[in-house]
Length: 174
Image (cartoon, rainbow, N blue to C red):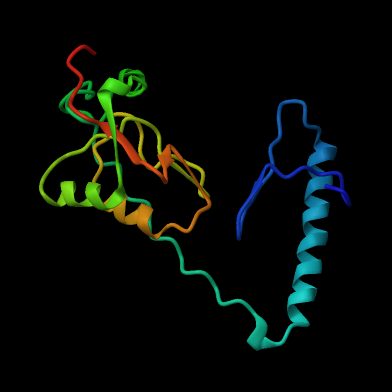
């Protein structure tokens, strides 16, 4: 920011997020690319001067994002299509009487016991920055395994002190 006058929205160990809008000019994008090239060259140069033993080991690759499980029957719009009524699920999930918080260990045990817990909100780890769970989606062991191996600083929609927000019982007044 100080050196190049470019504001970074978010960063992680291996990602940087810049935001643009409809008013961003071509020259501003060209300047951003020019600065990124300069920084990459500077980092490559600094890395090449380091002793091989001092170099960081590459991070383990992320597991693939699990396929979308399904919408709960309470929020499915059609039994033959995977579409769901996410809007209804979202607003039902905003009402505390419909939800409970469950820690990952208990959620894994419930799934292993055959329960089909349903997410009451969006769960979005950053990075990568896109939802892993959406309101009304059935939570599976694949999703829980994916979330367990992520090493992200931020997970929107997950409370580390309370756990995942799920529907306590299927809402009857929705």
